[in-house]
Image (cartoon, rainbow, N blue to C red; front, side, top):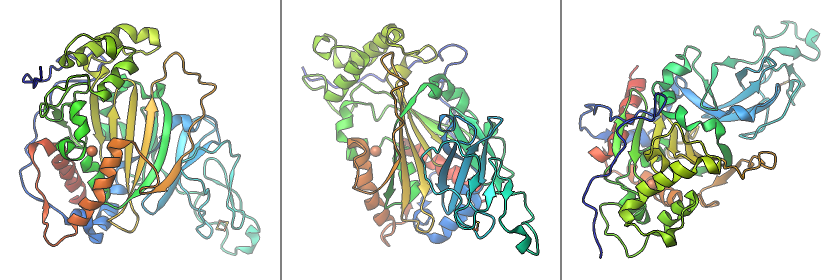
Length: 439
Ligand code: FES
Ligand SMILES: [Fe+2]
């Protein structure tokens, strides 16, 4: 019999012990209903304001702590026009520097998003000026030929740098608040997942023809599932979601391994739900319950069998064993957080063109007891043009759509974003953006 689900998603109402992720819905903020001007996505002037008042003020994600295991290990990342060098120090702290030689401005280290091992020092390839791991001058060849002496700085320009959640963060703002204050609720909410236990299995960058915010928006609402990802209607509930907005950051909790209320149950278990069942160790062919019971049964099965598989779910509630706890760390980090993996997107602005962006994609997976740490090789990071690489069906669908959105934003026939309640996170993101730009 074909049936449509009519009851609401059953959600866990208590957190899992004192250190579990809070699950209570946050109060709905009042943010009005006004149109969000499209010029935020298309204007060079707005892009420059973002650089001055947003990108150079916030904390930004660089790499993982495990990318820099030993003193001298280093890593280069980029934001806008800036290249940033992260270096593990002899005292095992991590420091961030502008990756630029103080002599004639050459970029000091030429790698990108790929961990580099054990430098003793950094020597600029142009005229051999040399810097220590702490950024200080080590050698300036023929210093006596500079009548003015060495530059009146101690070496590389350094930046605030800190760590949370196995990740290394930096800020272009010398007066930025402590990372802990900036992240607000995020550590309390996400520490139970223990990202430090997860292993990087994919890392790549794709240049997309859209503004970076168009990408952030696309991952901040599930209203577009019916239009862009119709296959997901047989995998998640796109309508009954819990949206929570906090000070800067926000989340939604979205039930997986269920059917959308927009569809009726097919005769057999939908293929993506079978994948989840098999991933947990269940046999879909032997399953006798209704498709509407699968989510709870997968949770039960994982709770009972996780420890034997080498997976510690003890700090996660039952919903977290199936669902997507989806977080946005303002301004540009999208986290699809699950018990067994975390798919993370970092959205970076193009340095010159508001119609372009860089989409950084990372996949982290929780190893089971068959995982061999010794054998694991960190995947090499690669940068692609749009269309040169598949990001999987779902992200490919978003990636295909976004350039069309950007084109439309540039049309005289369009004024701006007309936002509904299902897109509350989009409005909240813009409110936080306004708070920065109006400072
Ligand atoms: S620019 Fe670096 S040594 Fe000259
Ligand atoms: Fe999407």
